Figure (cartoon, each protein chain N blue to C red):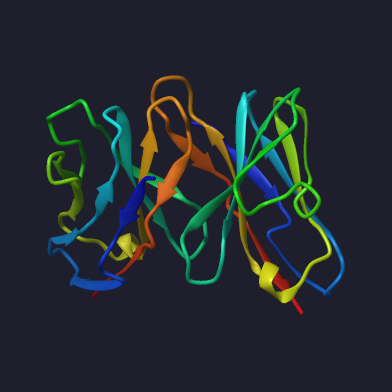
Length: 115
Length: 114
């Protein structure tokens, strides 16, 4: 299993600002994923971030709002841009566990509140 | 499109007792995986148990076991000898083989009572 560190753990932000969330993994991984968990809701996949290529976004999520970087095999960032109160959620980074088992390992998440 | 349904928003169980959490799913795929994840107040998503759809035998992990009924598209989680540390949100999830694209249910909040 991978150890995933996510920063910040929580933040309170003003409307219209941007926040960048960092995800650091203790081993090299090919596939990283960003999820959003809105208050009291389930997890929704935002995008898949593979090193060396553009992130692939799910329906309802766009690069201008959620730009993602993946500069190497152990690190990724997700930026939440031009925030509004509707962006208040937990954002979770996850990594694939390896070929053939489809396991996902998760970071501890970033609790974002937008005022 | 795949869907995952958890019909029990909240459940409670006495410590040391057994509880079963329900999950149903819908898919036209034949090769897939099913998971139960636990999310305690720390927010960390922790894998509890995993089932490959092609395996008839139900997965078990210590006190956790599943009842996988492929034809009925049902995947329930049984927690035996419940402990206070089992208090958490439990999510059922589906993933088509080879995709890593998870579909999560809405979760069941489980409270273990002392």
